[in-house]
Structures are given as C-alpha cells and as structure tokens.
Length: 216
Length: 216
DNA sequence: TAGATTGTTAATCGATTAACAATC
DNA sequence: TAGATTGTTAATCGATTAACAATC
Image (cartoon, rainbow over all chains, first blue to last red; front, side, top):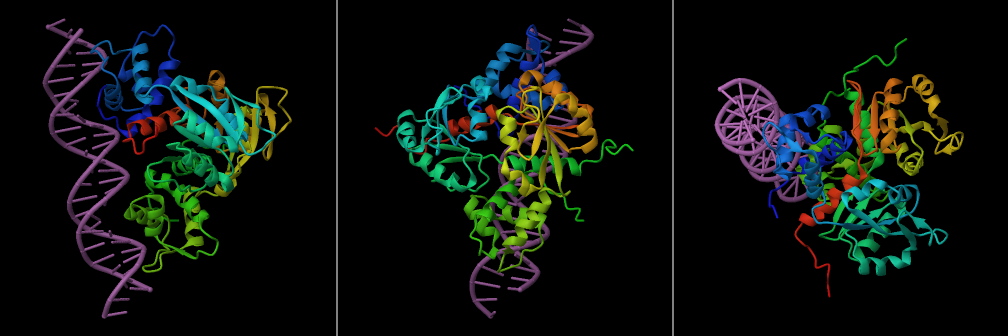
C-alpha cells in the first residue's frame, strides 16, 4: 500500500511506457530508463522519475526487469483491481468501444450496453448484450459499474447522463460534444474527437514547415 | 494575423467553451467569463485569460457577445481554414470516426478511407468511399491530407503508418495501442482508449469516497 | 576499479491563482 | 457615480530539467 503521489502528467505517460515495453522482443529481459527515453523522445530524468514513482525495481547498471516493470506500471494505472463499466448508445462509437480489445489489459470489463432503439435490444455487443434504456437503473444499481460511457447523440446525452448518475454511477466518460451537468461528487471526463483532431491540425499549422509538402 | 502564443492547456480548454456556448439558449446575446467559469467549475481568472488570448471582444460590465466569442474560439482552434484528413482501417473505430458528425464544426473534412479487406472497397464511409490500401500512396500524394488517422489493429499499425508518412502525410493520429516509429518531423499523437478509461477509474479510486455507493 | 545506471536535491520553466487597476 | 466586469501585474504552485551523489 504505497502512499506515493503520482502526478497527473506522469499518469498520462505510463501508457506510453507499457506500449513500448509490449513492443520489445519477448526475450528482452532488462530495459533502462535511458533506453525508453531515447525511443519515445522524452527526457531521461523524466522517465526515471516516472518509473521510480510506480516501481522500486530499478537497479544501477542493469536497469529494470522488463516484465516486472510492465506489471508495476499496470498496477499503478488500475490500482484497484478489476473495473466494471457500461456503455449507453450503441451507434458506431458505442460498437467500436464495445469491441475494443485493449480494455482487458487494463483490467477493464464491459458489463452491459444500452440503447434507445428496440431493434438493437438483445443483440450482442462485445462481451455483453444490448439492453433497453428502461433496464438501466436496475442493472446499474445491482452491478454498480464504476464508469458509464456516453456515446449517444448530443441531443440525448444529458438524459443518458441523468439516468447513469441517478442510478449511482460515480464516473462518466462523455463522447457527445456537449457540456453535461452532473451532481456534485460525480467525476466527469469529456472526449471530443473533433476537438482532438482540430488541436492536432493546429499544432501542425504552427510548426515550422519541416518539409516542403508542395514539391513541384 | 495575431502572433499571440496560446498555451497548450488553454487550447485544451477552448473546446469546453464552445460546447458551453452551444448549449446556451439561442437568444443569449452576451456571456461573461465569470458565468462560464461557474458553469464549468473553472477558475474565473483562468477563463478570462483563455478568452483574452483568442478574442478581444470582451467589454467590462457586458462581457462577450456570444456569437462573436464562439467564432473567435473556433478560429483559434482551426486557424488555417479547412483541414483534410484520411482514415486507414475501416473496422468499428474507423467507421465511428467516418460517421462522426462533429468534425464539420471544426472545419475538418474526411477525404478518403482505406481498408485492407477487398470486400470493403467501394463501400461508403461517411462522406467518402473506402479505397484499397494500394491506392493510398497516389491518393495521399495528390490530395495531400494534413492528418492520417490509424484505426487498424495493433499488428498492422506500423505498416499503415509507414504508408502514410511515405506518402508525405505530415501528422498521424494513432488509435492502435502500439508505439509507432515516425520519420523526423512527422507529428504523432496517440489515442489510447483503454488508458483513458483506466486513468478515469484510477482517478475515481483515489478520490475520497464522496457518497456511499453501498447504501444497504 | 571503472563505467553505467539509478535516484535525489536544487534550479528552471510554465501554468494557475490572487490582488488590483482600468473601463464601460 | 456605483457596480460589474475585463485585463494585467505579481505571487504561488507544480512539473521539467540540470547537476550530482549513490550503487551495482
């Protein structure tokens, strides 16, 4: 039970380290912070500090044991053990998330999916089944998912949000491009695909033109 | 042509303001930074600074003209005018992004989609059509998209990335949970759904238990 | 021992917040 | 004029980086 505080920024970099470790050949027994920093274009002291905050397996000269380090990082990210979540809205984005294979690695489990459309009810959605919206309160109260993902259209997002928070779901991950009102104490995270892509293109535009794209 | 630097953090908050402004009744002619800060649970000075960096329309006592402010924020986010992008991988996530309606507001336009599977080729994908991977180099060289989105499985992500960068695409938005190697000067942004959800649940776990979830 | 790597202490940098002056 | 709001200057806070000591 370490009480070490892990900074927000560090937490956001941990997944990068996991990806990198996963990409190494299976027989790579050891790895150093310097090596990780080089490959990920990060400062080596930063990486060392990040790793030190989640693992104490670092040894001078040898570095970290690859498998052990990956384990420690995963533990830090999903420190509470298995996490259950539900998805509301089985459109394209809901389907994509329901079938996303990467959740298992972080010990995240989809336990139910919901959709407004009666024609969708009963159909499979990843590892679970689509339920009617009416069923949301009972299922959430019984199974107590930690997170509710909202992938309904913007117009009905607040309604979906109210249903989830009303059923005691303590955290919301909102994919609809609207501002949601949540009760005091509810954790709200917004994902805005358009904004992310816009920021990326803006970043590109403000960079010095690295290579002549118009070559003619 | 203002040369004001807009900080990274500010840029990430701008979409929140747009969402909030969109959620206001159509007849809301004016809005103040204080009001925005209250509704979004942000510090009012922070909001005022953010707004000041993208707009000069703020007037004491009255605040900002809602429509004008929204315009200014959008301009700052997508400062270069229309941005074209392509998607590689028409699985669930690729489909979801191809049909995502929010891109238009940020002046982002899907110009082509690609998939490995011959059965997918020729089918519609949002506003465009699915092309074979073979067609990627020619199409990208001709149309010069600013961003390539990678939504293929982890195993083939590097291949897709090489195809895009090889065809001169200057920025990559990677949804595959792998570390990608890109040429010097290429802008790479990683999206890791599992990591995002893991972070959210972790955040929840480290919060003081705000309400008794087990009520019985 | 020599060399590579870790981890820590201090310095720098950037972002947030507080206090205040300016303006309609 | 009085009050609300903007915008700016200074203070605080947190994160990154540099310098260095510790260790295998």
